[in-house]
Length: 375
View 1: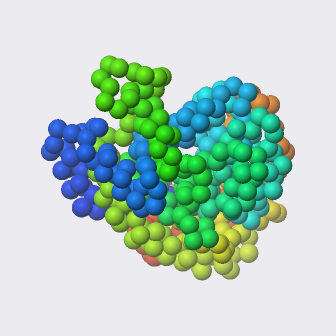
View 2: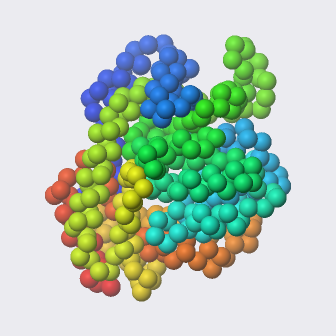
């Protein structure tokens, strides 16, 4: 196996982060302690919203909101097929049906016009995904929601710090979710966050994440069916420390992305991320794609070449509707969402993280150009 020279992703952990975690380990409050509330409050303040509810993953955050909003069998939730699978699975967890809408070829976000056309009398939730840290046009999403009286949850798991027309992604809808896996802009190791101005919704999510307990109830008193989706104080301490450095992280990632854009501009075989005139991208990953004349097999050959050279890379994302259990359950097939399938067959995620050096970036670029030259 080739030794990895440049990883696909790497968290940015400073001594202050380590010290914050160790400080918690030196107390008896490893879970449900003071750092939980501090992290929730600090993140809500950052977002300019009333409440934050910390959970153990972005997936759990999505699930809790689907449950708290009352979706169930017979209900439909509209979302994108070009996303991480949790954006759709969260509906299935509660017996609801994810309804996919194809994406815009330039932004790779769900197409807002197609979304509007997909609304039916069974639609109970719109779940726009801010793919790779690029916000959807939320004014258009909210207009559709208002017309039909449908709640919206923003899947902002990849978009912390992104803005759309002067507002942070995650502040437009009834609620939003964020995720803090180690490849994200900031990390808690594992973790996620719900944000909302709806105190009733937040209180219900707090109960659901903690085995259905109500505030002030005993440890063995369970008011409703719930889950263990708690985030430990150890993770919250890391999150607090990372949140304080988030502006630094976002600036660093922007610099890395801008350098990729500059150095790859002359590669005619590639389509680079589109400009974003409506605010600030929060770069989660750096994904390019091969032009339409190339096939998925050729893209896979590029990935194989990069891996043989020790360069971390991936195909972001595989279409959700073509995952085996979605095919089996819903009968999806190739051709159902042609834009998603065309993009997904040609994407190449390159190494991307805060402290990617110019020297390592140059190695990545040289290897990518060499791989493309073999096609």
